[in-house]
Structures are given as C-alpha cells and as structure tokens.
Image (cartoon, rainbow, N blue to C red; front, side):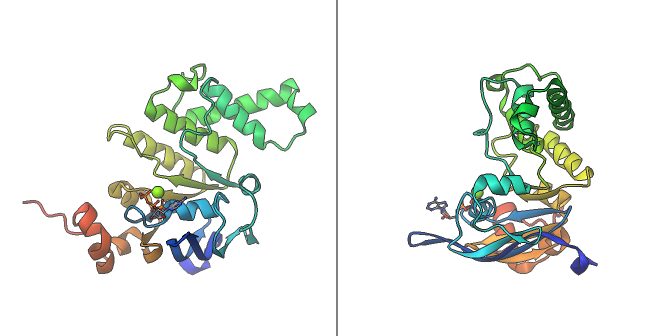
Length: 263
Ligand SMILES: Nc1ncnc2c1ncn2[C@@H]1O[C@H](COP(=O)(O)OP(=O)(O)OP(=O)(O)O)[C@@H](O)[C@H]1O
Ligand SMILES: [Mg+2]
C-alpha cells in the first residue's frame, strides 16, 4: 500500500521569504524511496526555491527537511551532498577544459571515502575510471570520453551534468528542468536516461519539469505547486483528473490533457 512506503525525504512546512516576497509559503512533501516524484507548477510557483532549500543552497525561513529520517535542514551544501542528495547545477559544475571522462571521474573521486594517499594509487584510479565509464554508458556519451567539455553540444552538456551528479553516487537526485533549452528531438534521449536511472532500482528521483507529456508518462506521483503552496498531489491519473489543477494550471498552460479529442 502507498501509505506503507517509506519516505526517503520529507519537507515539513517549508517556507522561504526573500525580503517581503514569500517564494514558498508552507510546503510539505513526502517522497517515497525509489520513486520518481515530479513537481510541476507555473513559473514562479517556488519549485526551484524548494530544491534550493532541500539541497542546502538556501536556508528555509521556517520548516524542516528530513532525509533518511535525519533532520538535515541546517547542514551546509557539501554535507548534504555527502549525505546522498545530488543536485544538477546546470553546467556550472562542469570543468570546461577537462575531458568528459575527467569531469566524471573527478566527481566520483571527490565523493570517494578514501584518503588522499589512497587516491594516488593506480588501483584506486582504475576503479574510478571504470565507474566513470559505466556512467558514460548509461547517459550515452560513449565515444565522447576524450572530448573537452567545452566542445560538447548543449544536449551533451546536459548529459554530462547528469553524469557528474551520478558519479557522486547520490541516493536522491533533484533534477530541475533537465530538458530546459533542449530541442524536442533531444528530449527522448534524456527521457531514456531518466528511465535507466530508475531501472537501477537504487535511486529516488525528484523532477521539476514543464514538459507535461514527459511528466505524465514517467512519474509515480506528482505534486502541483502554485504560488508557493501545494495545490494538489497524486498519481498522474489523479492529477490530470483534478479539476482545481485543470482550472488553475494545466488547462490554461498546457491545454486540456484529460480530454484530448480529435477534431
Ligand atoms: N534569490 C532570490 N531572491 C529574491 N526572489 C527570489 C529568489 N529566488 C526566487 N525568487 C522569487 O521567488 C519566487 C519563486 O521562484 P522560483 O524560482 O522558486 O520559481 P519556480 O517555480 O522555480 O519557477 P520557474 O518554473 O520559472 O523556474 C519567484 O517570484 C522568484 O522571483
Ligand atoms: Mg525554477
């Protein structure tokens, strides 16, 4: 039963104010382990701000973030990353003058538990390269290993960004609009990557995405945010059949997704 599933992450009454502006008013969300949970909502709804609070980039004005039963609200970003929450930071964590392979390997090494002297051993290096190769295969960057990151196409950079995140071996991935800036031809490849990550069976994915067809097809659950609050939560079926969601958001923004009638 749904209620028996274990939450890996809980946001409890999170609030974030920027001066007089309330970006997130009072948001509580429970994310089940190994699920794919999408967060949708119009521009300015507070989705990215919520991610920023979960990943420690922003300190909440109020509320708590519980990860694996532990309160991580006041931990700094790097500690939260070490706890196992991966966050894509859109290109910024890519080293442009390093190769694809080096970018991924370094990310794996940075999270490695070994001490510095062990880093230098050839065996350890081999192990990180092998891990990087595995991830390169998963995201479909095969053949691009020696390419400098700066020479990648936009779509390839988005793949590298996900690869860098995966290399740090997070148990929870926060993906904020991974298809942003992609052409529609590039979207299926990204969808495949997300499906492969799911198929690993060890990861939980929280996805913020505006492409409704994608969200509806891959999500276990969907939370709809609106003006800094949760407007609705449920399965894709429930969400697409919730009138308030239709009225406030989906209908206006994406057309009627429940009753697509042929003319
Ligand atoms: N650092 C900040 N300082 C001031 N206001 C901010 C800051 N970050 C976000 N906001 C404001 O908070 C509100 C929520 O923004 P947020 O980026 O979280 O929305 P979003 O749901 O991610 O939107 P989008 O779909 O456009 O990415 C917006 O009104 C935004 O202008
Ligand atoms: Mg955003």
